[in-house]
Amino acid sequence: MIHLILGAMILGIVVGSVIYSGADPKTAIDIAGYFELISTLFLRLIKMIIAPLVFSTLVVGIAHMGESSSIGRIFLKTMGWFFGASLVSLVLGLVMVNLLQPGLDLNMPLPDTGAATGLKTSSMSLKNFVEHLVPKSIVEAMAANEILQIVVFSVFFGIATASLGEKGRILTQGIDGAAHAMLVVTGYVMNFAPLAVFAAVAAIVAKQGLAVLIIFAKFMGGFYLSMASLWVVLIAAASLILGLRVLRLITLIREPILLAFSTASSEAAYPKTLENLERFGVPNRIASFVLPMGYSFNLDGSMIYCTFATMFIAQAYNIDLGIGTQITMLLVLMLTSKGIAGVPRASLVVIAATLNQFNIPEAGLLLIMGIDHFLDMGRSATNVIGNSLATAIVAKWEGNLGPERAAAADGAIMDEQPGPLPQAEG
Image 1 (cartoon, rainbow, N blue to C red):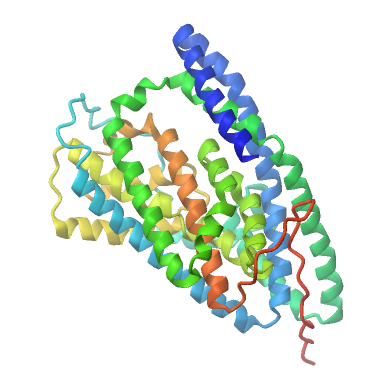
Image 2: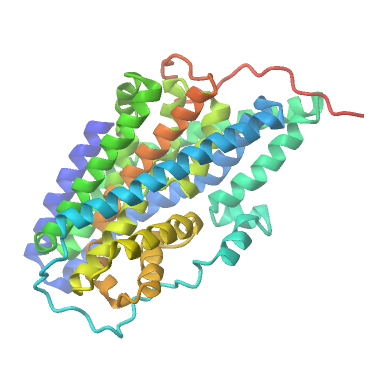
């Protein structure tokens, strides 16, 4: 599959370039619309399975944990790694943008400072984050694919199921069967991945061409170099805990990394990432708990982008920010970035809110919005790497990281032998 996806990416670049150079702009956009229809359909298929997959695997995993103290312990270890990785990502982005200075002496006409970006920054508040945390309705949360809200409900439901004794065991077995069915459905959906990758790449190249990459080569090159540095740092830190097995983990998640990169969607890689983590030896009860949380609290690619892009815009406007201001900005981003779950174009929204707070013209965001898709590809791939490493590390800390398992025929390798469920008191 990985070779098919790579081939589809290359073919998409070629076809998109031919369309961009051989058709007038309006015709190229119209043709790109048909390609986008294919990639949109694939992403909708992925979104279709995310909610039931997260719910079923997480409930079964928590029911297998049994004791609520285990859940609390895993939660604290998970959040500890998440905040540490986020801090490293933000700091590295700040260091790299100051070293490379991609916005310095930018010879481009800057947009009018009164120009609107169309992004709603009002959602970036503690009040809205707390209100967003707990679902008003689990049906509504599933319909909107609000992963964080689904996680909150699933934790309560899983603990309740574990407390029901034999009745809970019967219910867990039914939900476990549903989880396996969803993994089989995932296998069906993933068969369309190469076609979706081809369509997504062809569409974006047909609309914008590859020339836009040359214009912003310094910025994009600096950002991708920064992300590569982050990969090295995260993998090196993980190797201190996982040893040389970390290299095998990276090998196993190549396909979801490539899928996230080519579709610019880390959601598209979720099912395959979960499957390969379990194949690596992470118990389902840990993988199904840590991984969905990572989609809300451990977006390492988005974190490094926030500091890098914000400082790039400041440099483009020749706005000098002192080290104290930059540290303050880093701390602000550390907090606001944890509330971006469910916010459309989340990274851009966070950056827009940050620009406002530090008197940097928000219109500067228009400089990078045209190439944001190409940047989002790298962010999505980085998020997959960060969440995969975090999940394996938490399993290792719990002493539950097992040997690598063989891939099952249907890809559903989440079978575990649970211990006896605790009996409800009274």
